[in-house]
Image (cartoon, rainbow, N blue to C red; front, side, top):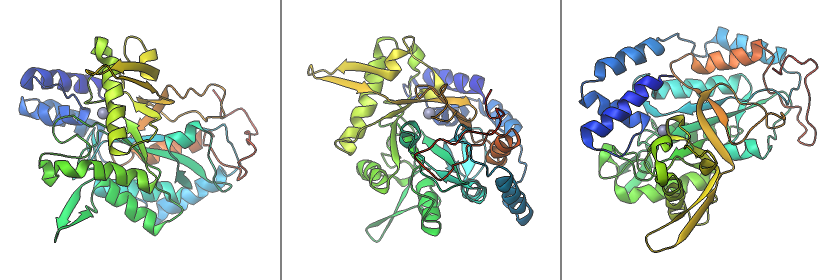
Length: 362
Ligand SMILES: [Zn+2]
């Protein structure tokens, strides 16, 4: 986590371009235009020094052993909510390589994890065979790198190296790995962060935006609101409700009737009045009143989430695990196993299997 970099990048973005968009991904890109590249690079290389842990045979063997050791049901254990941003050619604070994402999926799969959405998490709909564990995968900022179309002979194909291309391919090869990733989207940010690209940025056409959002909903992915254009809600003053309401309205325009349940806080910053992240209303220029009520709110960091069966679980403040570097996923899963905190299903959705010791609680 590099809050200083993120905040500095945002400030620089505003100063340099008079820009209103302030995505962490954006700040990195735009930051480099105003001479911050040295700061950004040194930070990202420091944080993401590669520790290769691709699922080799020995790693797979270790993984099976770890799975076997923790196979005792524990439905009060923790659930990792992994957070991704750009999917590209290198690893950085806000970027994961295509191959890295493929390896992360393979590693989770081998170690007995299966994806659930945030909606399923908060609804306690964790219906997994005994011995398996849930994980949530969240993609923030709606960049083209997450969902890119390639036009071939008048047909649109999903770029196999974009996050959606990688997820769809993994689902095809492993049907029990359902399409349940969560996309926390911006409809109107700059630098192409407007429903996965517009205005020709990275070859993406403006008219493809709704089609992409509709495709995600049809495939079972969860649509999550990341506000209108990523303005910091702690500094948004009287605009907090407008930014959240308009983010939700844009999703409804793309997929009429879709119920948005999850909000991801831009940069993890809460509005001064926290309740406004949960629910509020906004009156548009025509006097129309738009209300919103989020059932889940995602933080930027904080580690694996408590189980929804844990009395201390708070759906309005769900922590996440940032995927920074090659070892982030492996490290998070290993820590859960090492401390006996891994959520392991008992295979029966009607019962909540409690751990035999209190080791999973703190
Ligand atoms: Zn963001």
